[in-house]
Length: 76
Image 1 (cartoon, one colour):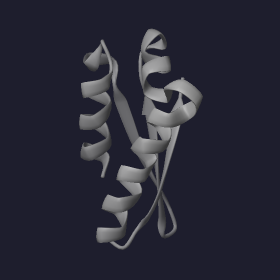
Image 2 (cartoon, one colour):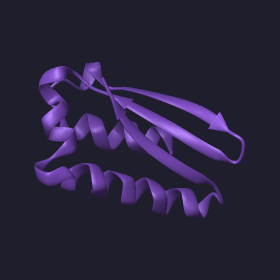
Image 3 (cartoon, one colour):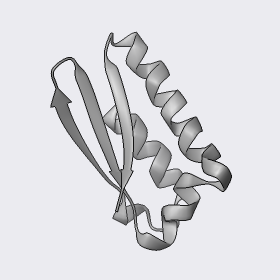
Image 4 (tube, one colour):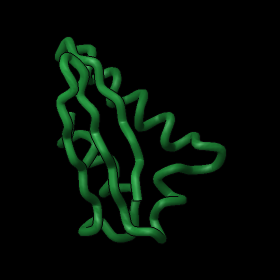
């Protein structure tokens, strides 16, 4: 799921080299922290958070296949 998030983010932003994804295990849940360049933050979040919601939906769908609970956080 980390690779999927990284691939999606790199295709959205202008600076793909600045995309970082940290994976944290919290019991049975996995937290993925997405970090992008400051100027790309708007592209990842989108208008009214639509892009961020779509990214979370895709990651949640891939997590269901792996029987995991995944949360995506967009951080600075």
